[in-house]
Length: 109
Image: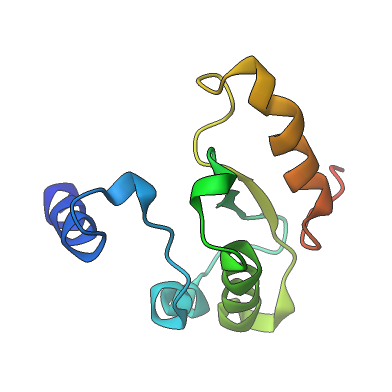
């Protein structure tokens, strides 16, 4: 299944799936079926490693789609795709700013 998803992503993104941020409502629609307990706080990788390569407004659109798709207006947070261990040290302050600036950030409990 992962191979099929990767092929589909490469096709939709003109061959480079890493440079393609999804911001269409259909991509986020399956979240409406999320069935975790209220103690679970989902986090979504909406902070891009290379924000300058992403179209203006992408994260805002993604945020709106997640809000619309999640049942009962539940709380959720944002993160980078896979931590920040592979990010250049000089880029980390900007990524932290993007986390802080996003209106959907959660306060850790």
